[in-house]
Length: 305
Ligand code: ZN
Image (cartoon, rainbow, N blue to C red):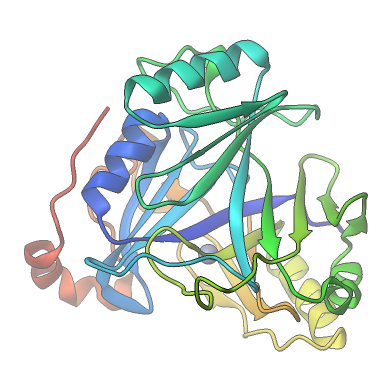
């Protein structure tokens, strides 16, 4: 039983329409689900990914309209790494981002850029044999499309404090603060980086920052087993929570990064067909009575596809 890399990454946006333009329009991801934050149903929870939202490709956003910009620091993920095929794909993205006025910085097999709210991304030439999880945007040749997550980088003050929990979850220590969560089908990793100095101020969870990262498990049986491993290593996991499209357990790792374990056994086609994923507001049964109000109050979203 192993974590199969990342399941999804969830961040915060203050501006859902601009967020959709950036991720579905410019980066070419498919919006695979338009729903609300199940714990605060007056705001969107938007899911982007490959054509079906395969775990390992899913980037999600809570919209808090008008939220102040966040500031990354200790206990937060500060960068999301994506796989691309190779140098030609990097060149394609430098050009495409540049044409949209997004500055990118290349360094060998890596290219960094930020979304309009400052969320940092890195594209990197893939070195693993995992299936590429590619969305199909009409303006993006499939050979250049994003292929899913490589990993994430987090700022932690005392990396050694995280080690027992990471070991308990089956992460393997690599060079330079890298921890691998690799299963037979997918690989993923977490980099533990020293935090920046806080002269600019303490970390703030806000627009353009990552809220949590979810690691990929098969089903409830694995969730239960990983949950007890986490608890034995000193974490305080939630019970298994039904997130409609997967089941989840949440806990903070010892440096404060919010971890989730999410199951792969349900998927986004559970409440709408694959052909029309993401086109309509989907609500879990407990929030269905709010539909009329929500449809009136939620910001209308563009469809850049
Ligand atoms: Zn999540």
